[in-house]
Figure 1 (cartoon, rainbow over the protein chains, first blue to last red):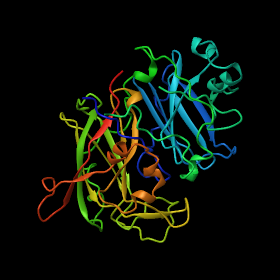
Figure 2 (cartoon, rainbow over the protein chains, first blue to last red):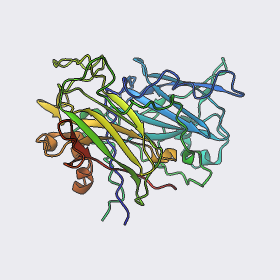
Figure 3 (tube, one colour):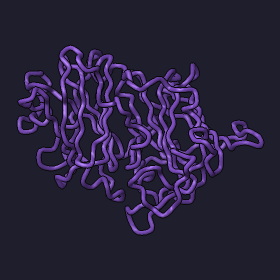
Figure 4 (cartoon, rainbow over the protein chains, first blue to last red):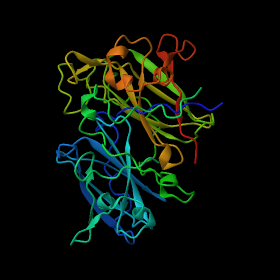
Length: 149
Length: 222
């Protein structure tokens, strides 16, 4: 007989002593071929930064974890994905996590299935210094496309 | 009958923090082929789990105050198969209901002998085991006279990123259950009951610690 999945509950506000670790944002070592810097800010529905979110990314052989700072900022050093980087967001006020994807350009066929005015929320913006910027907006104007996976 | 989706909704206004954080647009459901990146095994980059990481009562020079407990159970998938070698992380408030966190400022004492964070890997049977103290209930500002029932936060990894789960374990018979919008956000009563550990006299160690059993079920592999 199939068992029922244990229901999700919020990560809450007080995980900083338990889950983040110093190397968490550095999912690949410095000098990893093709490594990219990914950074951004997490915003709530009022446009306020979210200082108590935990973000995780995963690629084959690569795992990263970063808590947002007081200004809602996060950063990763990660491998360049073949297609996209899955991004998982936990936070106080999220009773279950939010899934999204970070694409580095807009050529992937999945993006063509996303409503045009929202598509751009899945595409990181290349910066002059070679890094990529990917903001996460929980709600409202510019709301990030979140996924049911 | 198992519930297809026992998870709480994003928007649950009784839990005030959901109001500005729940997405307002429907989620998109991409088709995940077997090569989808979401299905890769999350190779967490932590330093290896140390032998005493599962014992939250032995992280300082002295022992923490509170009721010593053992919390153990199995990590299973929905097919009932044990998830072996799964990383289980746990964190909690101290016996007075205070977290070792700068932003927890409610007037309860910190315990210099308790940080309240631990982790372990499941064994071949999918079993995890923590030694800790029973956390206290604590007030929060969600609504007037709001109190969280005593709980331990759990974070679990399976063998695919999509199996990732963060949840909370509660203690049996807590009178705060009906007043807690976080627990009550789980609408199905049976699914909600699955968040409550079971006191177990056989897990209880004479003259030393009360024992609780709590199994965690994650999605099956895609």
